[in-house]
Image 1 (cartoon, rainbow, N blue to C red):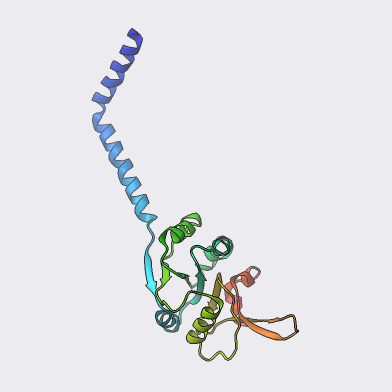
Image 2 (image 1 turned 30 degrees about the horizontal axis):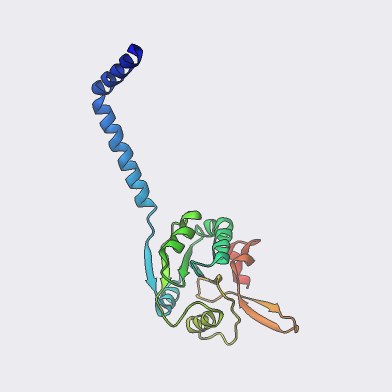
Length: 202
């Protein structure tokens, strides 16, 4: 019992003699946590199709990658995790602007995707109420942004667009089950074996 009392007395004496050190250490830890939380905060940016079109058309210095997704879609989560880890980090340093656009402002869903994948980009979200990012919606969006394209196929989300520095949408041809040629936007998955600068051949 005496030993226990002596131990606590010594501990109390130590803290009293080092109170300044303890206070400074606490302040440093608090500031560190505050800064860390600040760095991890997500910037939400509302956007509509007209604004997206303007962003694309006015940027002639960079490649543009646009990913449409639903924050509550599990396959979207898987897609972003795959392409972000294998491609986006590499492509982001190659004069590239990347836009992840959610179909709706669902902060829990968006935050889950962004934090799990350590995404440091702004979180764009759609404010065009007429678009829910269905297959037909995305087809209309592509046609509005690129009116010169005569015929193109689209998918449901997750769906990506790759645009070169001349603001040309990169496409790829596939044959369907009837052996008919269909044109689709070049997907990020198609870039696994090549660098972004090689997309100009498409």
